[in-house]
Image (cartoon, rainbow, N blue to C red; front, side, top):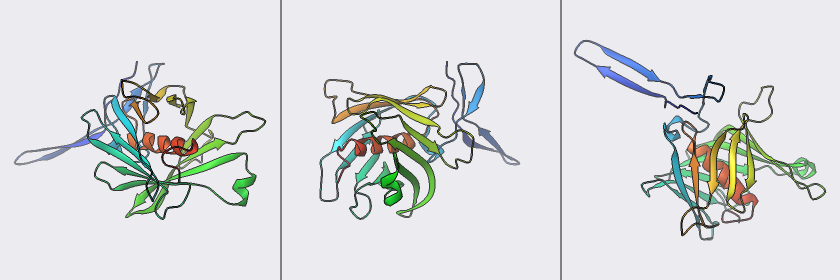
Length: 232
């Protein structure tokens, strides 16, 4: 059973005093203990209840295709631009509902990367349209002897004993996969649902307390890795 309380700040005022009350986000694990969920992008993208998002592929354009993500009210919650800022391959921009850039994602390139057994992606907070603070890294193992490892994500700063925080299981290409935390609990479930559902239109259910913008960032990378709408 999972219990989640969204962290927010409430100010109660009267003629003589102003009191500040903080509510924290934490989740009860299967062992009964409580653990805090730290937002990756921002706490404003976390919800105290399940979030059902619908993802639609956007047709390719001159600057690359992308994704449009709507919420349960059918309002735009996020969007993803393929080909980054200057139309470069391996660059993605995640925007919020009003079109402001919140994440800049790029695939690491160069000789060292070419010789590595993994493809590496970096996700940065976007500040005035430019990448600023590194917030997560995604490791995509290259196929070796026709075998491929798990896609894993590390939330920055890493400097910890564990080497990853989340992993992707299942098949994104078939729209049947999940993002799980290190304890094996499902953070977000990706799947087709409804008469219109398929590769171009699918559902993402994000568990309470988790950063929806971060989940959309991972989906953007998965889309690009599979050569879909965000590819240049």
